[in-house]
Image (cartoon, rainbow over all chains, first blue to last red; front, side, top):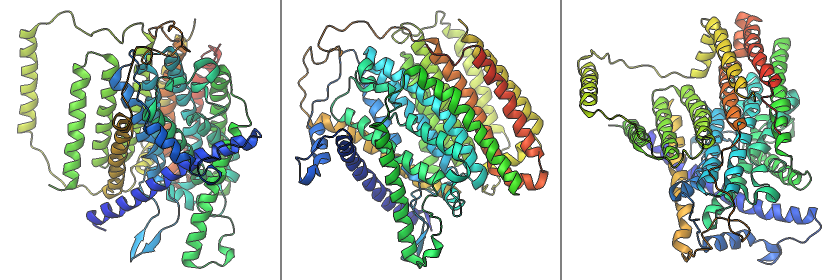
Amino acid sequence: MNITEIIIVSLIKIVFVLGITLLTVAYLVYFERKIAAWAQNRIGPNRVGWQGILQPFADVFKLLLKEDIVPEKANRIVHAIAPMIALFVAFTTYAVIPIGPNVNIFGYDISLVVADVNMGVLYVLALTSLGVYAITFAGWSSGSKYSLLGGIRSSAQMISYEISMGFSIGGVLLLAESLRPIDIVNSQAGLWNAIIQPIGFITFVVSAFAETNRLPFDLPEAEPELVGGFHTEYSSMKFAGFFLAEYANMIIASAMIVTLYLGGWHLPFEQSLGLSGSWLTVFQITSFFVKMGAMLFFFIWVRWSIPRFRYDQLMNLGWKVMFPLSLINIIWVAVIIMITN
Amino acid sequence: MNIYDLIFYLFAALTLISAFFVVTNKNIVHSAFYLLFTFFGVAGIYVLLGADFVAIVQLIVYVGGILILLLFGVMLTNKITNVEIKTGTINIFSATIGVGLFAGVLLAAVLYAPWKVTLLQEPVSTTGILGNLLMNEYVLVFELLGIILLIALIGAASIARR
Amino acid sequence: MLEQYIPIFLVITIALIFAVVTVFASKIFGPQRPNKSKISTYESGMQPIGTTNERVSIKYYLVAMLFIIFDLEVIFIYPWAVQFKKLFGELGISVFVSMFIFLVVLELGYLYAYKKGGFKWD
């Protein structure tokens, strides 16, 4: 393919994936509220459309038509840039996540990933570390003590868990021998990484919860002590930006867990089903989305089941439990490779 | 000029302009913010040079770690965020001569250096090459690096003492 | 190799536009009627207490420093991990041992920081 073709194909993919992500975010919020209602024996949103199915759109329009309040003590420029960074990170990360094997459309061999880069996994890590700035800047620029405390707590939490996340990925790389997400998925065609390295799987999932600031790790917005945390002073679409980014990050985290540990689009015994060519591809893409949906449900389920950690407990868990465990995981995988080879 | 040249000039402009703002801005947090773009631009140039692993490391270590450390440092220090940064002595005359001489030397070096233009073949996987080198030729350097990091770690830990 | 980064460049451009448009959308569609109490700092309707010029705990700075050091450690693990299977075939167990020494040296530092109370929050 020449450069023009690459640009056209990627633009189509980007628009497609962006659309899917935005729609998933909208309905993830809806399902979170529905599941919360179910967990707490309530009804949940049921007014806008059938069973409240149009609720996400009503919410977006409401936020769009709200006044954008900038507090007098805020630093106006940084205050506006912080939600931009959050959105930027949330909508660039999906680029390297593959949703299926290569397909042949109009004679072109097209990979079902926006950008098939060698550094795929590290690209996600680098952008995650950029995401810390959204929260730090939001906390600093608001000019409110709640925001500042929430922001600095959150950034310390995120960098702490980035370490165990990084080490957990090391175990995956040992088996896949590559940083390309597609290679990592293909290395799990037989046996999923979650089965070979359960410790790494657990540390990665826990770190992913902490990175996305979800309960039980949502200390930055611990309501009883910090009001809204880093987004106390945000309103209107700036608030919506943080909100959107949180849910988009949840989707990306689920997709990363599926790609790195749950075999991506591969299922065990998929070849024995006797599906041919394009039907197998459709089946594999469906299996990717089903796994991702299950992970998203797990995220929501945990939120409404487990209470919040205290800040010292959170940092202790990160540095004294998750960090050594993820190191043990690397040694474990290396030893397995040495025994089997 | 092809598309890569265009992207190179974009990243170069981003790096230079943001670096200029880092130096001239009076508010230290704003400087830190512009530094984010400088690092980003440099990472882009690394990618164009075919050093993708270095580009990612640049982002992970500098953007993810060192700039956060800078920001925490600013927040640790009382009332520094609203202080205008000024140096006490401004000696324009000798500064101009010094900078002018240095710029002249640099310019001469750029203009008169016999640049070798060779077409490099594009590396396939820089990470793999790095891994090979670390484990074969530079294994001793690698272990020494561990010790340097250990010293840094001990230094950091002793700060925590009350 | 550079072709694979063109989509990344496009994604970054589009995400940037998307982010800026989203944040400024409410400036266009929403009303702008600020008043004194609306733009004051949040404090449950009372007069705001305290300022943001308070200094934060040194612990956060320590966490950031430890993060940089362990982040560098992770960075050195990746090239090793990617080549491990291949190098193990060529060089045998020494590939494992050299990384093990690297990890043990750093974990000594980790234990030191642990004993010094670097991970203690109260």
